[in-house]
Length: 68
Image 1 (cartoon, rainbow, N blue to C red):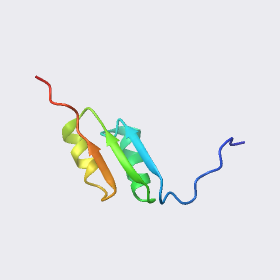
Image 2: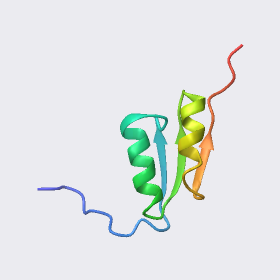
Image 3: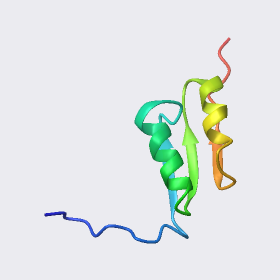
Image 4: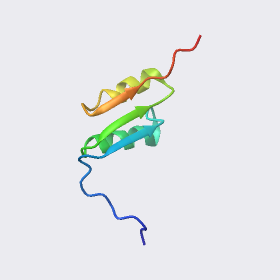
């Protein structure tokens, strides 16, 4: 039994995904971008991250800081 009611319509929601450059973070980002919320993405792998961030117009990407 689920304790939370499933969200049927994601329009108007905001979601922040940490670890969006690979694995479940990438899959979750793509799935949510297809369902309507604004999605903020964060990741450590800048190259893989840029590819995921380009998948949706509602994605706001926060690239990792430059290392010295």
